[in-house]
Image (cartoon, rainbow, N blue to C red; front, side):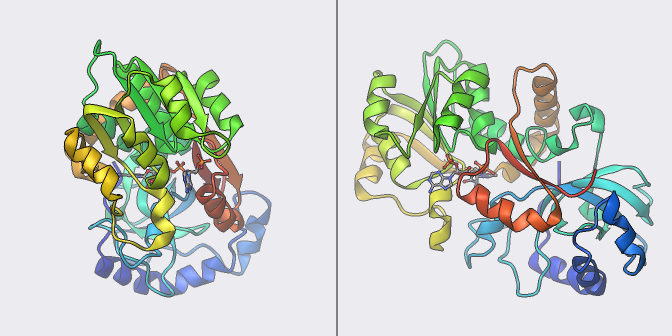
Length: 361
Ligand SMILES: NC(=O)c1ccc[n+]([C@@H]2O[C@H](COP(=O)([O-])OP(=O)(O)OC[C@H]3O[C@@H](n4cnc5c(N)ncnc54)[C@H](OP(=O)(O)O)[C@@H]3O)[C@@H](O)[C@H]2O)c1
């Protein structure tokens, strides 16, 4: 499992040490393994200068926790806001090119929560997690999605907070259902025994993918349909489990139709991230009253709080993906120069499944 983000101080220190290399690299940002590599003759990839540092070539993708790091309150104890001039980083996977770290060798596949948005990076060996590409049948981007932090979030969220019970005829609703976490969470809810899994997402194309490709019972396009009215039709017996990725008015409409003793899995609140409010953002009095009067649980959930369970969970996710019991959706954009575009697109719903930015082959 990728390690938790470094503390602010550690990140700053690493940045200062690697500062010259990084700014030099960012000027050669288009460099990839083919073609433009020749452009590196004047700005060669940095060599590890200190024991324990290494150079690696990345293929990574931006999750939206980066958006939270643009706020003063990131909503997570382990994540600080970005400092001015700091190199942007996020989840990444890549291959070691050169190593002075005894635990890692050239050719090793490594992941990190703090992968700099660069074509090449010099990183501390201790900030990297070596992974076995057989776990994903060589599909390395899956380490960022179903067999990485995203998969852990979906699986552990459902298991730790969802109280799904086989044979209990439960109905699960997932918001942000066609995104990285949501698309996996709904499939896990179904595999774990929910009788009905309903996804809420932002386009008809996404609705089709949820039902036809991923096996959701039904899907609602919140941009064109009346979520409350459609939920009443699809879930006449109410909702037992809600995997909440988005918060705001969609979540309030769902909670209104939840049954007594239901469970909200408070995964994320993406509709509120541009507001710079504390996490989790406050609910309306009406929704708060519904939670209380119906004894519905809604506890903050952070996948990182369950790292003792990550190894077993990643193994299970790997098996589920290999056996096609879980289907994987990805939206892949090529080139580091498109990182910002891909990030903004994801924040606006441009992705189906995990948004990946591929930086080199
Ligand atoms: N608790 C944890 O440990 C943990 C870990 C990772 C991620 N998360 C949370 O999980 C959630 C999903 O993250 P992800 O990485 O899987 O991203 P994602 O779902 O792949 O991408 C974000 C999606 O959110 C939807 N969205 C954006 N703005 C919205 C709005 N105002 N209202 C409704 N939907 C909106 C968009 O889809 P539409 O087309 O459907 O609008 C977009 O595709 C986020 O809230 C994130 O913070 C939590």
